[in-house]
Image 1 (cartoon, rainbow, N blue to C red):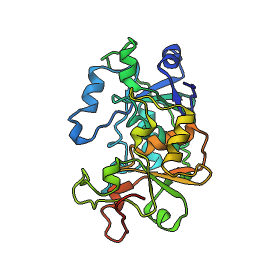
Image 2 (image 1 turned 45 degrees about the horizontal axis):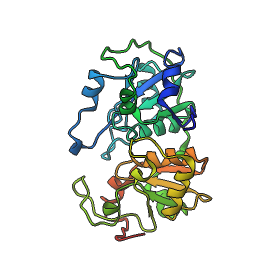
Image 3 (image 1 turned 135 degrees about the vertical axis):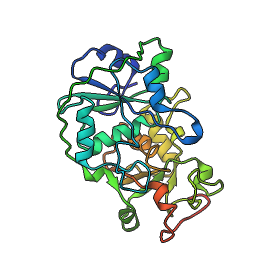
Image 4 (image 1 turned 60 degrees about the vertical axis):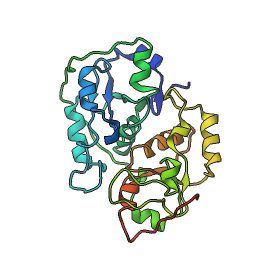
Length: 280
């Protein structure tokens, strides 16, 4: 794969740079309730040496009734500085699923203006499978200064979507997109945003949890009817797997993208917003 410290790096790249003093590691594992996994407990039981834990539910807009909405720049900067990550540091984010919630962590850093941040391709499962070290010791943390410089172009709300012309690309499974199965969150309608295209996030990943190569990524978007020459807004259930599509877009050099933070958790709950069922 092509290592890029602003999007995606391999386990080999991380192993070679593990001791770099300006490299900070972040475990951003998060799981849906039906996965029956405790992300923090798993982190405490074993993580890549030196990694800190980013709880995307806690580092969020806790005043919102929507799940893990992006926090204010001040809140994010406070949490990240307390994790020992400063302005001059490079960041690599991973998760315990392979490539799942780490992309959400990557998007949060990008949203707050940090460019030198990458996702570990294949995450902790690939790292472990290849025999690289893990530890259960809490990392030594020194308070750092993190300055948030938000990039509002990377996030969209429902109002922007209803009045905008960007393509909506939905990362949920096809059965949820078509409205054939109930949503995992109670109280949500079934279906999708009218006019949206469906590209389930698994279609941009290999079976081992790594991201597909650039040509295959472009083919996946094209196969879903997405025009890579136009503006794109990614969406999903609650803004987590949408970030995987955002990461894939960044990998292929598509700069005009943003993420609908409320995603279906908001759209599906609001009776004033239209829905569609079946294929796009």
